[in-house]
Amino acid sequence: MYDVLTSRYTFSCPRHGQSRVSLSAFRTLEPLAGTGHPVVYRVRFACGCGDEHDGLVSHDELDWAPLGLEGGVFLNLMTSRVEPIATELADLAASRIGAGEWPWSFFCYPEERPRPVFPSSFFLLTPGDGALGLGVHCPVCRRTSVNVVSHEHVDVPFHNDREVGVVEQVFPDDLSATLEEFRAELWSGSFDARRLSL
Ligand SMILES: [Zn+2]
Ligand SMILES: [Zn+2]
Image (cartoon, rainbow, N blue to C red; front, side, top):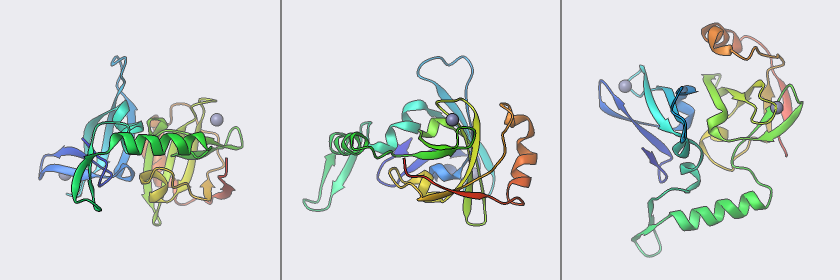
């Protein structure tokens, strides 16, 4: 499902059979009720065919696979051999996290501070103006923030924008009820810049 070499998820597309998209092509994520552990997420993604489709992603594929913390191989360009990737990437990710670097972060507006986060806390991604509106359920205070970030901020682990736009609004817990309205209005407002250094 997730290919660590290309940073892409594979889903099925009714038109092309298969679709390979990056995390920033996700539009909504919601945990499926009753799946228990491990949690499975229903994802709506923007497909290359121009439509949006639904797919399923496991918690591991969302949060750990991009860090190489699942099985996988890579092509070692020095030796031209395919080698197991998991250990090396996992060690690298672990040491960076140990040094205080986080693969993903966001600015929690209700708490007025940056926070580390994992993609399973994202619930809404909506593109516009070359950027991405990113809705996050804060893993700490449980409230909702919307940041305006680059695509790389989402797609590339450990790439954190130095500054993000913050929508200065306290959202209802159930934003999904007004999601379409929100998507339409997001890009007509203005954002306040906040530094993301943790
Ligand atoms: Zn498609
Ligand atoms: Zn928070």
